[in-house]
Length: 146
Image (cartoon, rainbow, N blue to C red):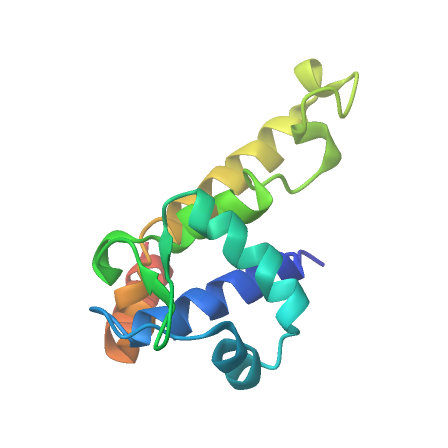
């Protein structure tokens, strides 16, 4: 079974919470933790990575917290996941040095193509789509039809 890492899952959920405050209402790490039932310690690691990548910014002082660094419609879910987990690799053979047979293996091509399709789909979904369920359903129907 294909599964996203918890870091990726929680990162997308945290970005959703931060996006709800756009354009400029900061949300604290404690609020994200309570709303998404994720430990503060784990969120600190995730949000630090997202801040360093330029997807979010921290606001210091009273009323501070985290805000998006760009508008929700410009931040793609694929981008968030790549920052937290790296490129999507469905099998170890897709990792550099992961398999000595990768260059001549027909299934390696299959898994690579599937991973690219998944990444392509995730790059069509933005935080704005997560904020608007109708928009998200429209994207999903479009993919299902193709």
